[in-house]
Amino acid sequence: MSTEQILCNGCGVDSKSVYFSGVLKEVSKMEIEDWLFMKPYVFTHVIKDLAETHGIVHFDTIKDASLFFYGMREKHELSDNVIKFSAAYKFGKRQGNCIPKDSNAQYNGSN
Ligand SMILES: [Zn+2]
Image 1 (tube, rainbow, N blue to C red):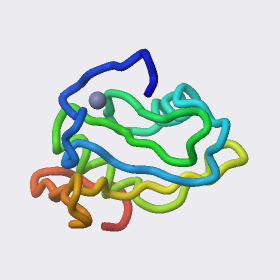
Image 2: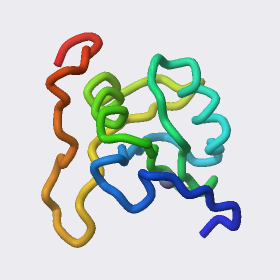
Image 3: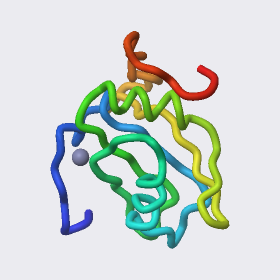
Image 4: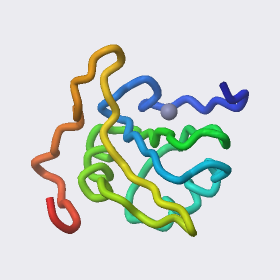
């Protein structure tokens, strides 16, 4: 585990977490955060170890997570790497997506 742990409302809450994986070995969480800051979404922080090929993005609210998830789920290019976003799973249960769509939210692109 990393020693610098930031806590937010999304920590440990699957409905406020979006999982990602890809060709991401040696891609730092700072690099991913810098890249995400250029996107039109609000998030709190990224959790990823340098050696891992996956990680989690956290959000303060379910709405933020929902906007991000439905706008970003798919593959994206990050520098020379590929990153793919998917829903976090409930701990212990493979229930699949537990991020609800927000009926009041404006979603970008195709839903
Ligand atoms: Zn968090």
